[in-house]
Structure formats: C-alpha cells, structure tokens
Image 1 (cartoon, rainbow, N blue to C red):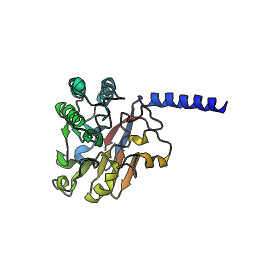
Image 2: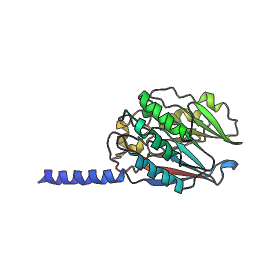
Image 3: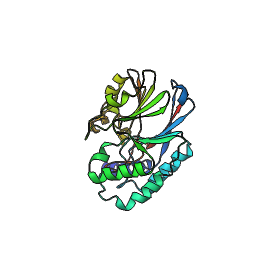
Image 4: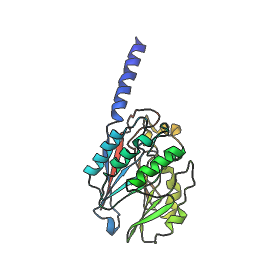
Length: 265
C-alpha cells in the first residue's frame, strides 16, 4: 500500500513540476543606486532558453510576447540560448530569428553566450546567428557604452572559454556605473574586484528542481556558490535569473522560470 501511495505522490509531483516548467513569471527588482542616465529606465533579462529539445519555438514566442508587454528600455540575454541535445537547427533558424526580431526595446538588445552555446559547433553557429541576425549585440569579453555614465560589459563563459573582464572594463571611467553580463554567477567573486556595480547571470535555473541549499552540489560548475536570488559581494550586487527553459529534465520545482524586470530609480 505504501508503494502505491508513494507512486501516486511521485506522479502528482511530476505533473505539477511539468506544469510549473511552462508557467513563465516576471520577477521585478528595483535598483536604487542607479546613475542619472538609467533613472526610471528598465531592463528585461531572460536567460537559459535551451531551445531545441524540451523548449519549442512557440514557448520562445510566449517569452518574447511577455517581454514586449513589459515595454523595457533594454533587453539583455544571459546565455544558453540553444540546447545541445538537438544537432540540426537549420529548419528553425528563420522562424527563431523572426520571433527574436519582435523584441523591440526602446534602446537596445545585448547578449552573452552560455556554456551550452559553445558545446558543439552547430549549437554555437545557431545561437550566434539567431541572436545577431535578430539585432542582439553579442558581447564576448567586450564592452558597450550605454550612455555617458553607464558601461555594459559581457564576458565569455568559463567552461569552454577564458572570461576576461580586465580588458573590457578598461574602457570605463572610475565614475561610470558598470553592469556585467556573465553567464555563470560564481564569476562575481572575480568581477567584484573590478568595481562592478551590478552583475546579471543565469546558468543555474535557480536549481531547476530546488529542494534546499544542498542542491548546489548537483549543479554545474559556475553556480555552486551562488545559484539563485540575489547577493552582495563586496560592492557588487548579483542578480541571478532562473531562466525561461529547462535542461536534462522537463521539470521545475520551487524554481519558476522567470523574466527579470530590473527598474532603476
């Protein structure tokens, strides 16, 4: 009898987790120490789409529609656009570019690539093409000046690459407000040494199936120390997105897929 009860419970949890994996939420965060040029502006952040196996183009379209409904000034993507389980992306490239092109923030779209985007040449080619052809500026150990007092820096992920923050941060002045896009949140231990004001990351999926802090031991390198929510490291504020897709399993538990809406004041 106890086995039947356990099986029923497990089935109910699986159904609930499958449902939650598709229920996209918006997580709103306010930054109060923003520079003059960002005051009143918003950034919509999405990450970890993992398009291709468990995540369809229709789900990507729902994500884009949700972001557009927020009317952000900027859109940032924090890595892992494609899923390494699918090898042939050619049939969906045109549709994917069309969907992403619907994102029309007031100022601009910026992205970094994640470890899954680098795992195979076909995956990398697809992610780079989809993002760049739809108007995203991909930052790979590079920086972009958003305004007279704000610089955005994007570093490469650390599984297949060497992230370099020293070179791109050199374009910023001491008084600039510095935002960093880093796929892996644990990079904050390095970035906080370079006077970064705000680091935005993904990678961890918030644990995806979050059953307590010990889940960190099962997560990939790069998010074993910081895996969800926010943190303050030295003078750097870290914000971690749960991501919008799934990886390995089509389930989420206590780690809802989310879009971040960061408002500056």
